[in-house]
Image (cartoon, rainbow, N blue to C red; front, side, top):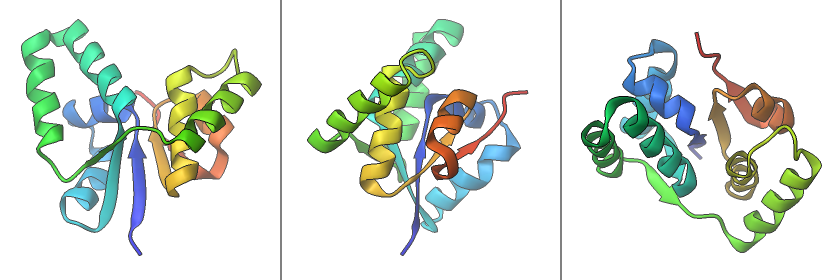
Amino acid sequence: MKIKYLFDAGVLSLYFAGDRRVKKYFDMVFNGEAEGYILEVNLAEFYYKTAQVMGLDAAEIRYRMLRNSEFKFITPSGDATREAAKIKFKNRNRLSLADSFLIATAKTIGAVVLTTDKNLKEVAGEMAIHIKIK
């Protein structure tokens, strides 16, 4: 069984910035060695932040590159929605609702979260890998 990775918006940004620390995870997905997942809400966050810094054209190009790749794009299930609400309730001052959905979805699909968010890593524990922004 292949390992599953669920990518947050920060990790997507690091990849497009050429950060070599995240390249290996993308290569594993692109080579079929791992399954790569992106939650729709995190893709929207990535698009927004890219557009904010680089403009809509750059955001659109990166969006299309991801959509046309080996990544699987998912929306949270009903169970993940309930779990995300509970995670957000317990961590209301530490996590965004999007991050709560990321953790809940990872639990639901059995994936490891790749994140740049220290608080998300602290809440998710061993089911997350934290990549520090330099």
